[in-house]
Amino acid sequence: MLKLGDQIKLSIEKLTFNGGRGLARFNGAVVFVPFTAPGDKVTATITKIKKRFIEAELHEIIEPSSLRTTPVCPVFGRCGGCSWQHLTYNSQLQTKLMLLGEFIKKVDPHVEVSEFLESPQQWHYRNRIQLHAEDGLYGYYSRKTNNLIPIKECPIADKDINENMALLYKEHLLKGHFKKKTSRFELTKGPKGRTHLITNQFTNNIRLFSQVNVAQNENLIKQVLNIINVINPKRIFDLYCGSGNFTFPIKDNNQKVSVSGVEMSSTSIKEAQKKALHLDADICFTHSTIEDFFKTHPGFTSEDLILIDPPRTGLSKSALEALAKKQPPSLIYISCNPATLTRDLTDLYKLSNLRIKTVIGFDMFPQTDHIESLVYLTSKSTK
Ligand SMILES: C[S@@+](CC[C@H](N)C(=O)[O-])C[C@H]1O[C@@H](n2cnc3c(N)ncnc32)[C@H](O)[C@@H]1O
Image (cartoon, rainbow, N blue to C red; front, side):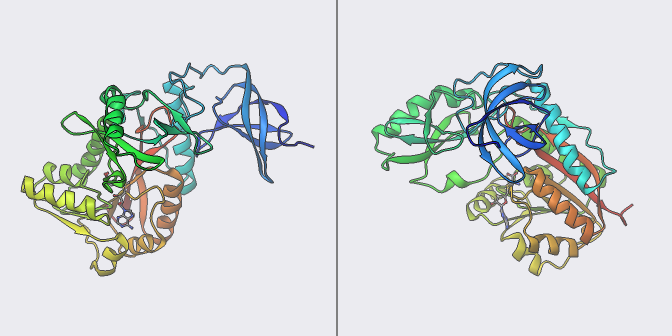
């Protein structure tokens, strides 16, 4: 009978979604082990025994997988950030492609996912990181607890952020900005290339959404525009538009198209409205939840395109039902969570005529197991 603390010998079969842990089997039971790679032969210590699975921590690598590489970060394995620094970049991409493909097959077994676009930068791609300050130190929280893991730099953060991290922290510390025993703060590389620090004591901007991998975000926007140029819609609705990441390039790409953005964050929508005024861009930004927006929206025509980019939780039940009821002719669904994407697409298949045309994966977050994707759907009745 297995018990907590037992050490078991395992062969890792594959990597899994949601934490990126390796999967092995022991006497028929599924065992999840973080920081392992397919092909690894390891010993692992059991930390949790559940009815349907076991969790274990890597103890020793007996025989390493050929997919392994040496992690560059000194706190890799302890920090709650990167889960896949021990994997070659190519194997990270292949795994993401495979996992996304498995998810999409659950929605529509006829759809193949053949593309997972690599990130232009594998390191130093984040233009924004959130850290914690505690007792004169700063860093990330550890993987399983809220213990601070002090850092000097972060290999996935922009180089300018790393170069200015210590100095900015010290400046704000001396000014007394970290008043509480523990404070959260954000380092952001602004559009003018300068890093600045904001603490959550002074602003709620820290919660404002923006894409962190600027170069890969440009690729994502390009793909959205490619699709738009093919279908040439008359009206485009950018739902969950944030501060207009897609809305502005869409308008810029075609001045004739009518473009609307809907977003519930007042800070984001104000930013978008301010930018539209500044650029003299004819875009209608509405401050509303998507659920409320659908309550009064009269419905879509055959010349509309709807773009949705919801948070990790995906669409709420009422947003999904309202969207399906309005029978959009074309839909682009941008997702940062293939599990909620799969749930939502499965429901859209049941409730609407929408069917998948293309799926493209985008590696927005190298060195982690996060999967970003774009799914383009058209109505069965659309030619
Ligand atoms: C993944 S972000 C996408 C933002 C934007 N498209 C971008 O690329 O920067 C999701 C956005 O949806 C907004 N949001 C979340 N739930 C919402 C809801 N029920 N109605 C409207 N907006 C919502 C969030 O405030 C956030 O700005």
